[in-house]
Image (cartoon, rainbow, N blue to C red; front, side, top):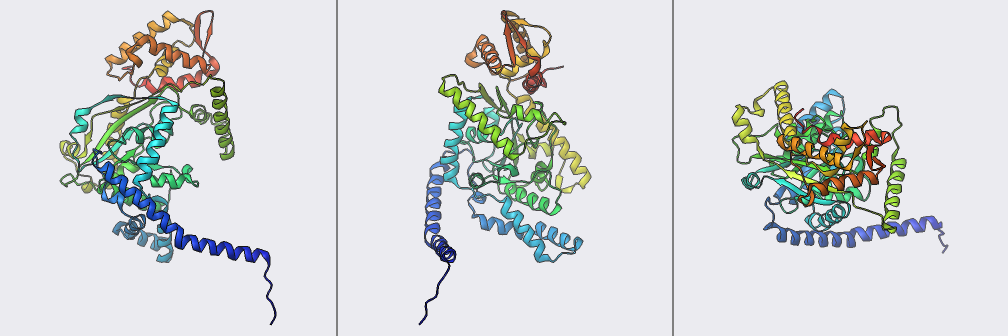
Length: 469
């Protein structure tokens, strides 16, 4: 009887496939069971502590949610229209929808959210910033019905917004928010999905994709899932508030029933930083002639930044990036908003609904804009930006800042004064701007560095809208 000789590569391939099969049959189910049991235990622990409970929708298995989305009536109607207009087999269209659903639907895990995510968020936020909660409308927040769908509406200053918002509201609710395609890399996307976030394709013109995304957001809103919404859509490149983009907001309110059992409540939230990590990268977007860095270049710049900060820490010269502050405003009840205006989005034509959604978006962004905290660096930056040609002594600087504070207070702005000491706040803001060479000191006089004028304006722009003029 002859022997059969197999090439080495084939033997290795067979062994690897056998190991993968063994893992899939034995180890992976055990790991899943362990993670689910830990998640259930965490859910039991936090259920009584949260002000807004975790909804059954968030606890439903991901595949079940995907199937519900696939066979939703409106998604099925969109599939039929797509198949007819593009002359495609329905099975091909449904395969596309299935891919979109798998891309969008999160896999919320309470253990990762409240144990891993919260711990990471707190450590990162507190190691980089002096995190503070400024103004809070406690009475308004306490009046929200436990059954209401709550949406935190906020300005978008930095990618740290996701970390900061989730960390600061972790004692109230588990946030679900949209994340761009930049985060769809292994293993980051798995962690983000387990935190309850869903991925979106910014500026997608694929009508079928938009219908699937619309229905997912609509289903989550109808089920009472607490969400975070950035109406600006993307980060502010010049520091100013951007006009609202209305897609996600429209999806949330399109099917809202003012007479239904569940209210939809928007909580405006203002965020600001003494330093945003991406400031110089964002400013590159203002120069249309400048070449945008590719992914490798961006990754290299990030590593170089981290290395530089590490070298400062080793020399005991590293300082945290100042203050990061969040203000929580008065909730906006959609039930009351629509009742006061005698409106019902379900009964409007497309054109009328778009106009009314635009009004609502502007109303919410105005609320958010008024809540943006005034911090030491933006405060000092605005004074130097308005005295760009004139060096200031320390006394003159403090006088100008004091006058600016009085104007901002008169306009109703929320000013965070560290230690309730204005002198300390001005000194802290000036020190950070000197460390970053945005401001230079010569012979006891301080002046803005003309080479850093755009960066100076970036921080001044974050609060300039709060002034009455």
